[in-house]
Length: 294
Image (tube, rainbow, N blue to C red):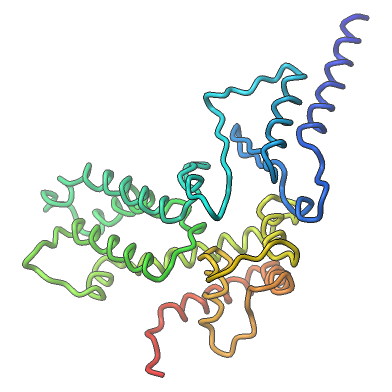
């Protein structure tokens, strides 16, 4: 009988733990934000102030669930500070510029390990070298690239870095010269900015087709909410800004991404995978097209 009572008490405590992790939202902005984000054993608790995080620890402690302080990070997202940009989540730094620089370093390290293949591998076919590059180097460089919101200048720098790696793979060194277009054709590659664009729209469509209650959709809905403080000056280069810029390239275009209504319209299109692929293809072709003389 005692065992049954203990089991009953344990189940009650588990239920209470699940429902009391965070206080429920109290204002309109908080209601639109995700309060918990979990991926495998990586769990985030999100709040608008530091009191919420203390409440989490106190609630967990009541049920003998201890927080490992050595493995716990407290991150404050703020326009004023930049420290949060170096916070790593699921292998990716939150700051896009910081993450790109880290990806460059990691991919260069992988490229250097295979230096003998690129320089001394005369008996290795070019096609095989390129397969090795895409599998072992490029995959590191573009990891999670669909989440990046890059400026035009940052894209050009990344394209130049990519071409530099391709020249190393083909062992093309000074004084031998090759045009960018010839290099891409020889390697059967495209500018990395085009690859990032494709992944950006693939990820965007995937999220739009998911449940409206997942953290990513909650965050997007909160971003386009009419309430909230507006900041002065030029807006930061964020994913919604970049996605809207992608749409603006289309000729005879009626689509944009500046309001909640625009987001819902794109959500409807995303439900039809074929229509979404066609839209993504049009955007890619518009990005590849040379600028007009107008």
